[in-house]
Image 1 (cartoon, rainbow, N blue to C red):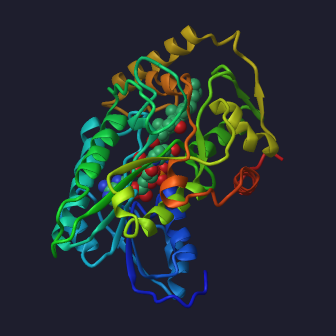
Image 2: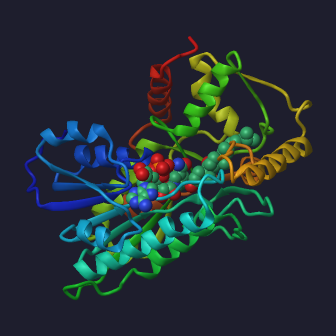
Length: 369
Ligand SMILES: NC(=O)C1=CN([C@@H]2O[C@H](COP(=O)(O)OP(=O)(O)OC[C@H]3O[C@@H](n4cnc5c(N)ncnc54)[C@H](O)[C@@H]3O)[C@@H](O)[C@H]2O)C=CC1
Ligand SMILES: CC(C)CCC[C@@H](C)[C@H]1CC[C@H]2[C@@H]3[C@H](O)CC4=CC(=O)CC[C@]4(C)[C@H]3CC[C@]12C
């Protein structure tokens, strides 16, 4: 943890602080925010790793709570200077109902905003998503786009719908008067597909590859590019913008920023192979065996099975019509807005991000090597 002579007088709250991204935000705050005096980590499920953080100079307060419960959120927010709202239900596989997704992502965000207003917390950073923009249901490519690139954002799936609504609420709340009379300052960060230590889907692909004798089968053409961003850089962007919200309120307040770094543009599968390859997996070319119409048929079949089996069990494979459409549509960002507005530069180079992720995969039980 960073040693510093700066006065420690700031209280931060991270919702979803025990999730994949949340844990990195929590650790990054402890390392890179020298003015931190207390860090509140709010989550439905608290991680045991929080205990080891409680020995440093910052008071780490673990709060088991639910963002859908307004009173729990208000109690956690009271007295905090900054809220980083990363809690969310990330589900594009049909595990949760649309109502639950809406409740957590939209009502939960409303609760966070109202808690800020009622208790006098002035700074709110929201973890939004690229999914707020696209890919849209028409499969239009978004190629090297930035925050101002025109794009027909049409959503039907509950997850992007909920993220779009929540983001709008956060941005509209910018400037609202909070308790004490000062204005609320908000902004939203939109990560593209996040990767790095703790990434559940990467874990799933790795284990699937092991089960298939060290092979993964290409489903998506290599020409379809996906924007990916390293979790450490996403966390760093949150820490940096939270720090700058007060000084640059007029510029940053009410703004959206894509989260980006120097990770290469590649197809989803080729990008994953950057980490899984060095861990002993190989990607087998099966494009001729699995043309798009066949994948679509399988995806539709999966959706049908999910619906039929729902009364008996939860069937939620990675492949469904929505994930196929996302995976099969180019979506890449190219922007420097965060750099211009609050001086963001990626903390981790691509080489560093890659090495860290490979080490994490290698450390997983049952490494293929
Ligand atoms: N994983 C990705 O590629 C991307 C994620 N995001 C966003 O980043 C945020 C974090 O996502 P991940 O870390 O990937 O997901 P995650 O599922 O690992 O983390 C979300 C955390 O929120 C907590 N949570 C869920 N419901 C809650 C509730 N009702 N009350 C309190 N806590 C609750 C979960 O327990 C979990 O710890 C989400 O808002 C997500 O929409 C945005 C873009 C890409
Ligand atoms: C076997 C299939 C053909 C391919 C499966 C890959 C998919 C599971 C993933 C491809 C693209 C991913 C999404 C993308 O990274 C954008 C996202 C942003 C978020 O905010 C949440 C996660 C996700 C929707 C991510 C989910 C998995 C993919 C669909």
